[in-house]
Length: 139
Image (cartoon, rainbow, N blue to C red; front, side, top):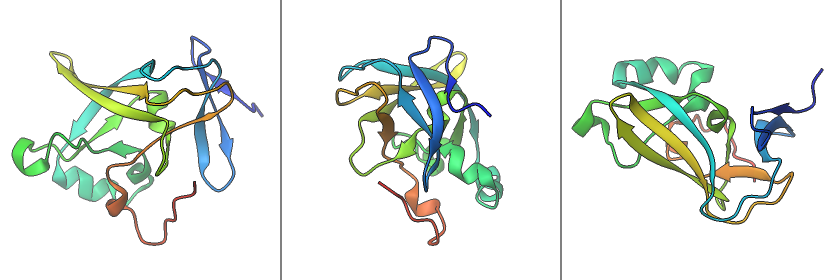
């Protein structure tokens, strides 16, 4: 069994976090404002979101605060790459920044605080209300 799984640049790695599952960790120091990761996405509509909420995909999809379903028809995004492993925190050290282009939407994880080596990278989920009440977020 592998204890840590690294990205290709060795700047971040994934490991198991008690009571949370997998989490993303810094393998190098990040300064506030640094780009931690950039990932492509796949957008989906409300009918798909209703299906996702009945599966484990609920824990891996993102909601953009700047695009509401009734305005855009887009309910959320599956984000590919290491960003999808970042856990929630009420006091995050990173944030997701969204960009749109000809190839679709992209998600970037940006440090909002200095992050030390072996520190877990966290961000604030925008869709905590979508989770069942049985889910308790651990800090």
